[in-house]
Structure formats: C-alpha cells, structure tokens
Length: 350
Image (cartoon, rainbow, N blue to C red; front, side, top):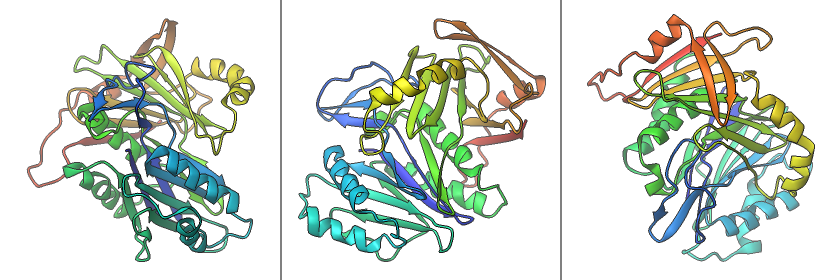
C-alpha cells in the first residue's frame, strides 16, 4: 500500500505520496534514504523504490495506492485516453470500470486526480476499484494504508494553514516536512509506508513539482547527522542520502518510459547539483522529538544566513549553523495538553 493525500488550497490542487512499494521479491537495498529498515511485513517486502505520483499532462496528475500492477494499467488507460480538451475528467474516470473492470476485491486500487486549467475551477477527484468515482467530492482526501491517529495528521495541519495566509508555493514543502517527521519517529514500514514523502501541485494548467529540498536529521547535540537531498527533473525524483551513500532515481513507467535515457540526459547535472547547496528548502527534523524547522532560501545566489554545507566525500559532509538556527533546532517539544498535534514547527525565510 502507500500513503497519499490531496487537497485544494487557494486555486491550486496538491498531491503528495510516500515512495515505498510492497512486493514479493526481496529488496535491493537494506534501508530507505531516511534510515528505515526495509522489512518484511505480513509476508511481503517493503522497499523505497517507486514514485506513485504521475503527471498525465499540463495541469493534470494522478496519485495512486494499492495494487501497483493494476494501478499502472489504470493510469496508462487514463493517459492514453486523455484528450487536449479534457476539462472535465469525470466521464473518463467513469469509463475506467467499463473498459478495464470488473475488478477483484483482492486487488484494490485508489486514485487521487488533481487537475487545473487557466479558466475553470481546479478539480480534486477520488476514484477506487470498489465504488468508482466519488460523486460527493471533497476538498481533501487521503488514500492508502495509514490508519489510527495518523489519519488526522494532514487534515489538522491543513486546517491550521487554511486559517492563515501561507503562500500557495510554500504549503506543500511545509506539509511534507511535517509528514516526513512522522516517518522518522514512527515505524510506518509496518503499515507498508516509508521513504521520501514528496509531491506536486497543479495551478492554472501547470504542474509544479515540490522544489529542491535538503533534509537534515539530527540528534540532541546536533551531531550524527543524516543528510537527504531530493529534487525532481523530468518527472523523476532524485534522492541522495548520507545514510545509504547512494543516489536513487524514482520514477513511474507512464511518465518516464526509459530511465536509461533519462540518466544519459541528466547525469552531468546530477553530479554538479548534488555538490552544491542550491536547494530552495532546508528541512531540519529532530530525531528526539517531532521538532521541524523549515528554511526557505528566497535567493539562491548568495550565502545562507543560517546554514552552510560542504561535502567531504564518502557520503559525509560538514555543516555549519548560525546561533539562531542552533537555538531553534534545540527547542524542546512542549505538549500543550489541549489535543493539538504533538509537533513543533519553526519556519524562517532566508
């Protein structure tokens, strides 16, 4: 399974998903980029290996959960039958069952479709193999195998932002940072979830991936750091981790037909980009408590006021932080005892 969420906010539609996949074969790697053990869950293996968000065209993208093989067939059907004037996706989704069904209850698939154009209202649609298209339609959905108290995580976070005035181009990076912190502190692999949490938004007929992000996981002394960088190029998510000392390129076959051709095109850029600090967002996640600090680099052509990073090889790096940032990182988590979510979020513009 997986965990995906989608929501509307300020004329945009957002999607995010984790990158773990459940399969019968043993994993190719031992840990996710964030250090989660690739475990065997209920007889199957869970491994960070798949991008489950697929752009279909300008302004239209789909996230899926469930049986990967069947989901791929459904997404391929949508991609092949999407026309240039498909301003309303409801008829196309309704035809999926007629064309590919009936579906087995043992191979459940759920879809979230985000769509926007330059004229009409943005759309967030939910479809599954059991009931088809949800005609009630909501401004928020989550799909996959995340259960219990985690189910309230994203709606509560979004309700806080909806009452404020957070810029539409920043909300995705903040929300995924909070959800990523839960992956650091909870054993989500037991629920077939894990790896990088990443996403995109559609706005006015454009599909806009989450901006380049550096994640830094730190202990109470701000030592023993794990550094994970993530960015998207041509619909492929690139993840580089000091924990695993490797580079992982996560894609889906519908949006990236040849990963070999993609590597040939981008390998020079990957090497140079991974050795720089030119990332729009820096996300610091405490490994002790759910303390999340997000820095947004407004200007990449100057040095950061808060942090600098120097790679020293073999997956290691040297990081320097300002006194203000160090103070934020070491702030304790305080339970307000009022039912609010147990995390602290710091945000700074840099």
